Length: 328
Image (cartoon, rainbow, N blue to C red; front, top):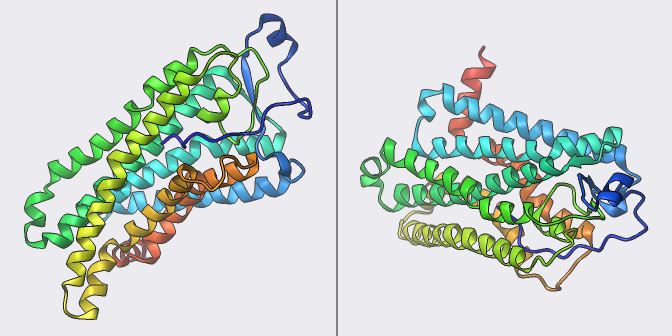
């Protein structure tokens, strides 16, 4: 999902690299420079180690959960089918951004081609949008399981939850197409430094040498539509879930029932709260570092923490791991 409009600091002469001589002469940008965190430019080794750990942990953790759900017949249920999709999305979204960051921190390869920048932006935005819709589908699944347990197996049949997952993927990958096409048609004639750690829509528009009001409107509308289509479903599902849980007489029964959706509830909070903060912020603009750190919560940290949430709080995942990994 594309982050809401964020104001970044302007490009100025303090930055060491800009458009090369070819770009200046042709008035066309053929590549962009990923600048990263402006105030952390002297900590490349530390940043490389941190992001390498995050990437390896994210890919390994989500990969294990993805394979366990495929291999263990006990996990072939609607809930774990959605979890496997979410794990694959987490691996995909981090692979869109972190390897390029590692190249920048390790060998100072901070250049990305013009087309490569837009491809990175498209696939990353598509993965984030698909994750929003998938989290909404997961919330609906938990709503049916807790509020209509006797009818759950009749409602969440195989073709229904497959359609819900496919719809999430299709909507996610279709939603940013108009935004990407409009941005791709903008003229970029320098400078070419992106004040972010990946090619994102708002900082890229800052570099266009043309009116971007239409692009801003389309990008903001896209973010709002994705948010309004997914988040209210999650809120309404959990309102009904909480009402059903409160009707249970025993405290033990309430804890046991709510534990079936606790992992999803934690993941939703980790993913959406930073987005909500970016929409409703106490000041109009922060520094590029603060904006980048906020973006990291739902672009890097949430995919890394998802395997921890689902493995530590889920008995079925832990049992499958012991059976498939520890005993082989």
